[in-house]
Picture 1 (spheres, rainbow, N blue to C red):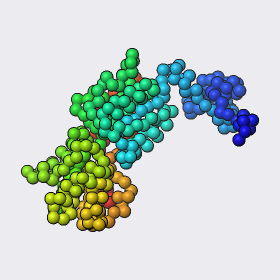
Picture 2 (picture 1 turned 90 degrees about the horizontal axis):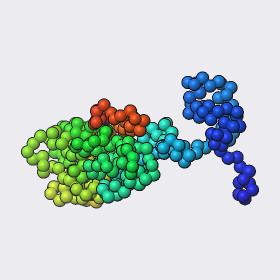
Picture 3 (picture 1 turned 135 degrees about the vertical axis):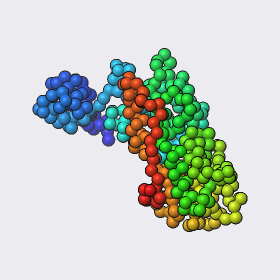
Picture 4 (picture 1 turned 120 degrees about the vertical axis):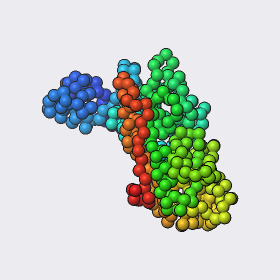
Length: 346
């Protein structure tokens, strides 16, 4: 396309231009765009004229000028350990919808469980002027890290990981109760022969899942059935733990629980390498859900977190802080999950 043709293409109009060319005020245009015409009794004729003009030309908001005027960026940061993790991917998708409904932009980043990278990411988001941060931290979050120089603390909500004595509102799934129920069900189906493969036992969410396993197992030998990997929640960690387990067993385990889908992926790869396939008699337990699990020939039990509710509670709490309405009534919100066996909810 040549420069002259490109010049002739219609361009989106600013709100100010729309107001001038339709003969109404800037406020009226904004109210129509934001769906507030009926509430503020703007006539149907005026609304239709504005909407018809926008339909022909489109509109664009001067975010830079608006941010300077209102001292807001209309941007929210979301920091998670791994964007490839199915649980966090779903949370981000839900948060993105929540942001879009309020005219906000969601900026996402991953830390790969590296504290220094997390600190740099928080600093980078603050430097870009985000209005709030939702974070699944890889270490105890320190309040001073969430303060822009010369400003008050930025609205902050912690998700997934309930660190002790945190000052930030926190929204998590019910990991302990979910793990307890999952373990009890698998023990009933396997005759009590079950192992737990967990990454990062120092993380509050994984520690809670281990507590649930211990509560359900309830014997002095439970410690021998818990294998943990301190480095990270990865498929390679799950593979190493399953290799370690197979090294002390005569054959495949009757059942095992992995602390995440990534750990399950690695554990299954180790079984595939050893036996040339996944022995069909093994009962698999895990947390969260992936559609490919439904294709497995094995019995699969999983605790599915309510990501829609977690995202909604966390986002509403963040907006309350951003708009000066304070924090949640409780500093910790625990959202129950659900236990599934294959496709059936138990």
